[in-house]
Structure formats: structure tokens, C-alpha cells
Image (cartoon, rainbow, N blue to C red; front, side):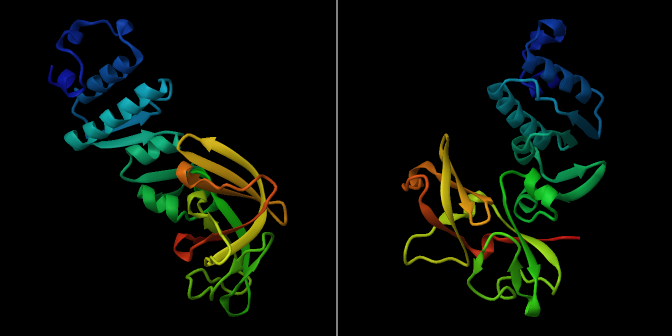
Length: 244
């Protein structure tokens, strides 16, 4: 009965047949059964994938709260980026049976160690670069203008070393006349998409690469499609992924 209370199930569910429970109730019953053995570690294999959105969000919060109250180790397997960010203390990204990176969610999102991790963790802009004399950078496609020394900005590469400059779409902004940024790139505004509280834009660079920009709805860009625009972002929002 203590487990039923812990999992927000009525006491009369103790004798209820599982086949008569809803999807969310079945997941709670399954968790109660697992906890009855008082294990040190619980494994979850995409337990919420078959549930509707609202129920999934409710159970995410309940599982997070249960983890805090029981103090047990939860190993939670999911293909959902949102679930991983909400549920985890630490995230392990796997690829072909090997761990690509293990770290806290914020670090994996902002400082991924590989292209795979960067792309797995959501929308991302990646610009191929190569180190040249003095640790400076040479773009291999999109013409990104860097205001300042690469060494000072913490993004220098050794001569001949390959890498990718990474910036998340929410950190890219439209640059107005008279404004500047550590990194500048020009392009043509091709598409815009409404994402509820946010707007997403596709800007085509000179080599055809699409750069993604995200803005809050109240900060939406007012220019027409087909307009030439200038994008910029700051060095502190930029991460260098070195190619191994």
C-alpha cells in the first residue's frame, strides 16, 4: 500500500486487474512491482514511448520526483531528446554500441565532443574549418567572418587540424546595420516556420548551406523571404569540435 501511495494510485488498486488499468496506470503498477524488491538500480527501456503527450509529460515529472524521493539509481533508455534533458542527472550518448560522451545534460548540449553528439542533441549549425598559420581558421564552405583572433576567442586549431564551429540556432541573431558580433555570416532568408512560442528561420549561405535561426515569437524577424540578411553570434556561444 505504501508503494501505491508513493505512485499516486488508490488503495483499491491493490486487487485491481492490470488489464483494466489505463496506459499510465499500468506503467505505475509495473514500477510498483519493481520497487517492491527494493532494488538498488532500476532500468527503464523507453517506458513512456506508447503514451500520449500529456500523460507522458505527467509521468516524466512523477518519475523525476520518485527518483529524488527514493534516492535509487535510475538507468533510463530513450530516443527522445526532451525526455533525456528532463529526466537525467547525467546523459550517456551511445553510437554503435559505444559511448560517445557521458556528462551532465547542459555540457553535452553546449559542449559536445563529436558531430554525432552535437546533432543528436537537437538543431545545430556546424561550419567546417581548418587551422592555418598561427592557429587561425580557414572556412571550408560557408564564409564565416571572425571579428578577433581565434586564439583569443578560444577556438584556435593547429595548422592542418580539422574542426567544426558549432552554434545552436537560439544563439544566432539577425544583425542590423551598425551592429556587430564575434562571428558574422551573410545569406538569403529562405523559409520561416512557426513553432508555437518560437519562430525558426532557414538562411541560405553563399555555398548553399542552410543556417538555422530560432527566435522567440515576440522577437520574430520582420523581413520578407528572399531578403539578404546578416547573421551573427558571440564567441561565448561557440564551441569548436575537433575532428579525430
